Image (cartoon, rainbow, N blue to C red; front, side):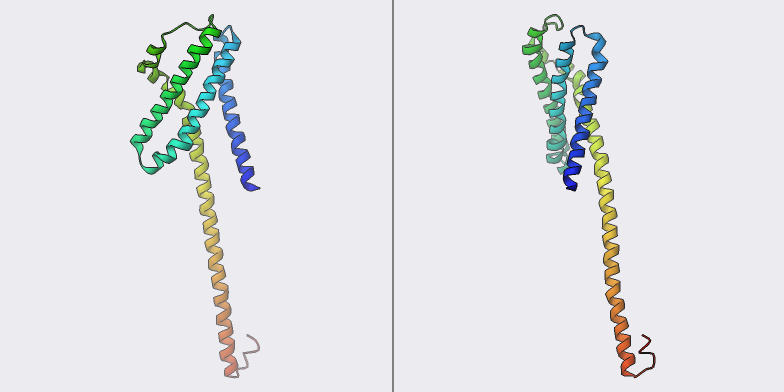
Length: 191
C-alpha cells in the first residue's frame, strides 16, 4: 500500500513536470508561430523525445556506468544518446514536419544537418536540460530517503539497546532477590 502510494506520487510528479515543460515550450513560442498545429505537434514530438532521453540517462546510463565509476563511458554514452535523440528529431522533422507544414519549415539537407556537430552541440543544452532537472530532483528525493533511513536505523538501534537493558536489569534483580533469600534477609520481600 505504501509503495503504491509512493509510486503513484512519483508518477504524478513526473507527469506534472513534463506537462509543465511542454506547456512552457508551447507558450514561450506561441507568438512566433502562425500555424499553431505545427507548434503543438513540434513540441509534442520534442517533449516525447526528451522523456525517452531523460529516463534513459537517469535509469539506464547512470546506474550502469556512473554509479559503477565509469565516468568517461557515462559521458560518451550520454552524448551518444543525446545525438540519437537529435537524429531522430531531425528525421522526424525532415520526413513529417517539412512535407506537412511547408509554410512553417524551411527545407534543409538531411545529411548535412545530421553531421553538423556544431549545430548538434548548440542544441545539446536543450536536450540535456530536463535530464539535469530530473536528476537534481531525484538526488534530492534520494537524500531525503537516506535521512529517513538513518533516522529509522537510529530508532531501531535505540529500541534494541532498550530491549537488551530490560532483560539485563530483570536478571540482576532476580539474582539479587535470590541472594537475599538465601541469606534469609528481611529485605527480600521488599525487593
